[in-house]
Image (cartoon, rainbow over all chains, first blue to last red; front, side, top):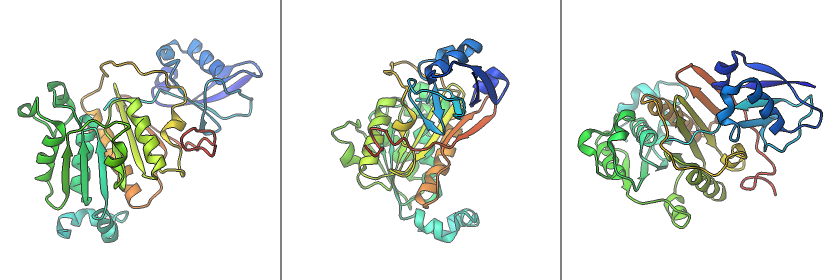
Length: 82
Length: 238
């Protein structure tokens, strides 16, 4: 199935878009969404394990399952420098 | 409080005389006095809070100088907290500025922050932010996260049990590695200004904006409206 994913920060620069379509399987998790994103946009590979992912406006762990109607967003990892 | 020095700020309808007086009754605790923290403290003191404790156990390094206007070459090797106290006290003698040269730990954090109306994040690592978050939520003290990396900064004001907390937004953070973080010199001042604005809003009882992400190189400014996670181990209902 195709899902719409809203993206933030430098990912807009990487993709040239604010929303992208990703192909995932029914019952897939947010980890699969991240994997599909990184496969399509390898420049985001370094963020793969730390990406901020929300499902229906709530940050969620990578093992959370995804349905077609869910609102998914991807943002670069939390930054920690001071 | 000498009200006239804030005349131009009082003209801002979001502040007004009432807001200015309210600010002058608020005590802030800043943890971390480096690139972000020094700039945030500078702004908050100029804007007229009542008092601020600046906590940092580190000394000023020459590599700090590219990202803050508060320190100079003569300060290298001196305590960040004590230099900030001296430098910023002279900016506004109405504000009580106290530098505390101490490392924040799980054992002393409660005693350091318990009188705060707000905690301001000037730290440079995730574990300390998680400790601040846990303490702030437990003792119902608002705090304002800010961080920088390369050309990107993030800010989020956290109201205990009302907004998402720091743990809510970091479910996918692996063990942190100690490494030197790349930072564009102009970034901390920019992000500190945003952090200061969110701090002032919190102190005036206004609703914070959510998670703010600003890429100063590509000029992307995003706001993520984040809900609390009911399963969050720190602020959730369980």
